[in-house]
Image 1: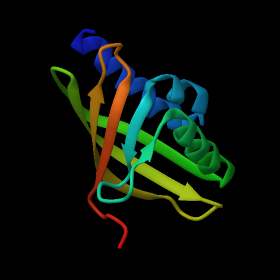
Image 2: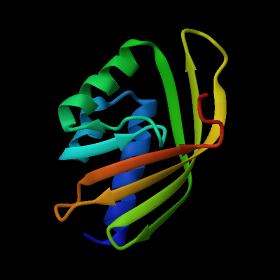
Image 3: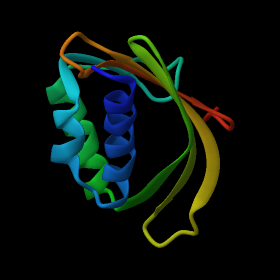
Length: 122
């Protein structure tokens, strides 16, 4: 998979939040995906767990927009420095910077995703 294709996969992942397209997001993951959001919390493992998480997020009324500021690809890993804006239930949205570390498998799917926040929850 080319670096351009990896960058496009990350851009698709990020764009799926604004339009609440869980199916597109899930299609980017390997079956054994490990997802830490934020880093240091117990990871979600597997596509089924990821689907439940994202469906629940949408059902809870979250509005999330993730805008990449810079995506860097090195081999089978990539990082996205991203502006995240999130709000729920009519509350004013909060904007912060997150850093996402992606690891790709041989098929070009995300096998690991770790999210670092500039203001992690206590």
